[in-house]
Length: 413
Image (cartoon, rainbow, N blue to C red; front, side, top):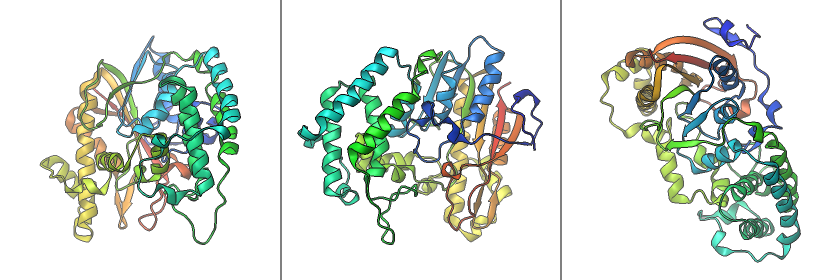
């Protein structure tokens, strides 16, 4: 096992050690920190540090942006940062976490938090700001539901649409689970009948979280780039407004986490989702079983599926088709990124392998073979053990926790 983080010295197939990602809690990575399945920040940091040391300026792309792990690192080094993401709540978090905040804006946010604390109990709730989600009342007691609506109404009364309101809404979103009856240790929201939870008081939790959000972005004024250039919603079909030097991403896993269900309470309160929007986002997420109904006409992808996990088809045809469609989606993603990259540009993919019905699916190997068919050269490969399994995929009885993530370095000739 290699403990070096010198990117140039990494040997093919090296297993490296990384610090625990929770050490980043006093950085912009704290923003939206409970968003499910966040990738490990130290991997894009290591890659970006190497690339920026050999270039006066780079343009970076993450086609599966999620809550912005790659972008938070990239704005420190890159001339521009570009993203694709289907989930509006993830977009909000990533946008807030990657912006530059001046000392004046920091002071304004500190003053607003104090003003909110003074005004909220006398605030008249704006019923139009109530979450548009079926059975939303089920997840909250009457007191906290009323107080959440008062707090959101106060934020809207004191701010205009834009940067400061986005920041406060992101902090607001972070308290929703704690103030609900849903278990906090589970990624998917549910109310335990065995262990009754005592929800946190709304303003107590907001007063605890909001200052931490402000502390997290204190140093962002030093960043090289401000925010994200959004290039689309669909990671399998997009055009980028400029040529890209470096793409880094962590795609969803096969048949993985239903992100929309995990963050539906937060999304509903923030106003980025209602029932229809949640269905739309879920249907568009790679790895979702609902996508298995799409017809696959690509014989190369089908041949790879038969080669690497063909025995799954006879055991569980539904999950076989889910995996097949996932790799077809990844091929289309690889094509879009290939078109966006400059000649000599690199695409780093961080992905864990899956076990489905006791059959190992070598996800990283299949992706690498698809990339080779599209014209990429596979020039870098290393892996690391996942330390913080809060960021990994709970697999239940379908193979347990994923222990390793693999990093593929693909280059466009």
